[in-house]
Image (spheres, rainbow, N blue to C red):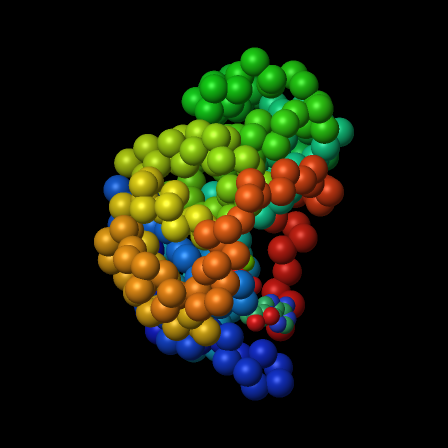
Length: 277
Ligand SMILES: Nc1ncnc2c1ncn2[C@@H]1O[C@H](COP(=O)(O)OP(=O)(O)O)[C@@H](O)[C@H]1O
Ligand SMILES: [Mg+2]
């Protein structure tokens, strides 16, 4: 379970970008966060895995023993340990293009290894088997030995999800996991993410209300840093207009979303996420 209580964040100039956000997500729930561009969705997710510390409020998560911790108010060493159990799928995959799919999945556990072991890249056979089974779970075991640069966008997104699963997370977060995919791949990814909620709370940011209506158990809408809706994933047109305003027309008229090759490359998937302010 994750409990977000009244988190707020202001930019250095004083503009409030998160303004009292609260919600609780339990195991069994697949929550879709919707909102216009700049609404505060990504910043909210960053607070949920402790990458961004809000100015006020709390983000309570449970560890393996069931103890509760406030990510906004704990020592850095404990925060680091708790973050290992939070799987995150970033916008743009964040995969290492020159490595194979299997090696990218293995990187999900880099943060859990001692420096010495990681220096020598010492994954055990058992870990390799587990990484392969994460790829199999997403039906892409057949590309395990292929370099990521040769995979399609849909396959890359599945590698990114497999990497998050391989971390054995207690919470899964995804920021626009469908953003580079065509509609049929987007459906496949949603079908694969949904059952993961049986094992952990799953929270994703999406730009496709028709996808969240079909696959999510609940939708939260954010507007100007505030939660303006939290409930049934099937939204009415009136509600969509409230959430998106003028942007709604673009979403409805959008042809197939652009399929882009990602350019971001990082050794450690969490490395280039920094607290900017
Ligand atoms: N590093 C940053 N520095 C300054 N402003 C930022 C930064 N990150 C986000 N913002 C601002 O905060 C608001 C919310 O951003 P974000 O959560 O990324 O929006 P979105 O809902 O599109 O994910 C936006 O107005 C954005 O411009
Ligand atoms: Mg965003």
